[in-house]
Amino acid sequence: MPARPTRAQGASSPATARPLAALLLSAILSACGREPAADGPLPIADQGRAAYAACAVCHSKEDPSAPGYVALVGPSLFGVYGAKSAHHGDYDYSKAMREANLVWDDATLDAFIANPHLVVPKSRMSFAGEPDAARRAALVAYLKTLK
Image (tube, rainbow, N blue to C red):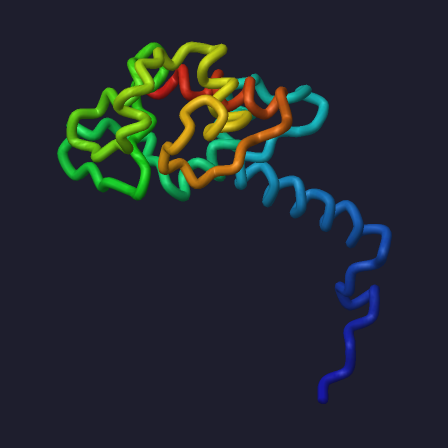
């Protein structure tokens, strides 16, 4: 087994290893697109994009009329903001949702995301609701961008 090199032979010292490790970590984080904490919080729509991961299990954010659209369990949320309930013609909405006659504005979306079955009893929405008002506001802000 070869002997370990001495510092005189090119081995790094703890004093040079730490800055190198910090530089490497910085490069890795920047390559991942991570923003430094000093830049402040994410804009509300970006926070909503992160929160949308829970919705994405059942709902696409893609345009259902686009080529290659893949339907999920729930209807696409593309263009949902400002639309009437049960607005995507190709989705088989529950009778309750078809008869709800809602417009998906800030207040309606907030209430529905908070407690779907209170707003549309007997809908097929399996989500129990989001109690955090800030998270709901972020989701609504993100849904407004899906157009």
